[in-house]
Structure formats: C-alpha cells, structure tokens
Image (cartoon, rainbow, N blue to C red; front, side, top):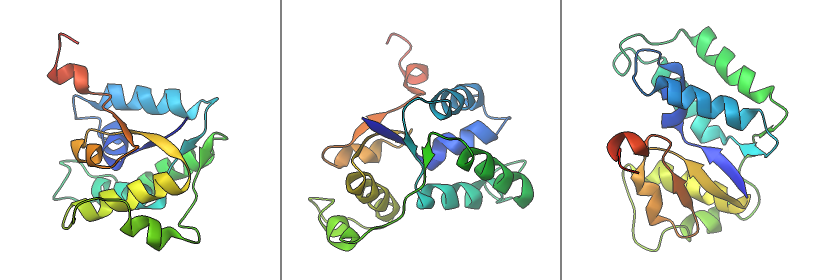
Amino acid sequence: MSVTIDTNVMVYASNKSDPLHPIARDLLEKLTSGPEIVYLFWPTLMGYLRIVTHPSILPNPLRFAEATGNVAALLDCPHIQTPGEADGFWELYLATSKTPIGGNDIPDSHLAALMRQYDVGIIYTRDRRFRQFDGIRVRDPFEFIRNPEN
C-alpha cells in the first residue's frame, strides 16, 4: 500500500531545534530510500514552504532557497511521486467527509481526497483529525513519545 507524508512531519524533519527532528528526519530518509512509492502531494509541499519560511511560526525559519532546496531534494528521489488533482477530483472531494467540514478540516479533506484518488492508504502525520476520513490509516511516528508504554 502506498503512503504519504503530512506537512507536520516535513516541518519537524527541517526544524533542527525541535526534539522531534531526529525521528522525522529518520522517517523521511527511510521512506525516500524506497522501495515503496511515496506520494507527496502539492498541498503538503506548499504548506511546508509556508510554515518553514514563516518567522512567526518557527524560531529559526529557513530561507526560501533552503526550503525549496529541501523540496527539490525530495522530488529528485526516484521513489517520490507528486501527482495533482485529476478528473473527478471535485466529486471525490465533496464525498470525502461524511459530516460537514470547515475551517482547518478543509486542507485535511483536500489531502484525504487526493489520497483516495491515487489509492494511497497510509499517511504519516501527527494530526489526529485524519482519523475522521474512512479508509485512511494514520501512522503517528511520534506516538511512542506520548505513550511510552507502547
């Protein structure tokens, strides 16, 4: 089954001052080395650029050239795919959530619909809201930090 990575994992992998940095960096290195295909959707990549270059979000934001260099390095990996919305996306997006959504759920439902369109079943994220979307399995690479007994 194919996987994708949420923006938060990419941000932790770039933010060397965050205690979660080594875990996120190691996960990205493992996933991008293959052999499985990893889908990186454009909303995730653009969200990454928005967050890591924003001085109000990170204490040491990246310069645009460094952030885009990180994205370029990922895109150069042979196991990375970056598809966009294909025909039928709008209908799939509208059918993604069983309940009305709004606010912060909009970008999550966008990503969930892209996952469905490309048959990607697993997302690595710290965002528990993805659990609301049927058929999407959430893998929190940092979960053992919250639950050390696991």
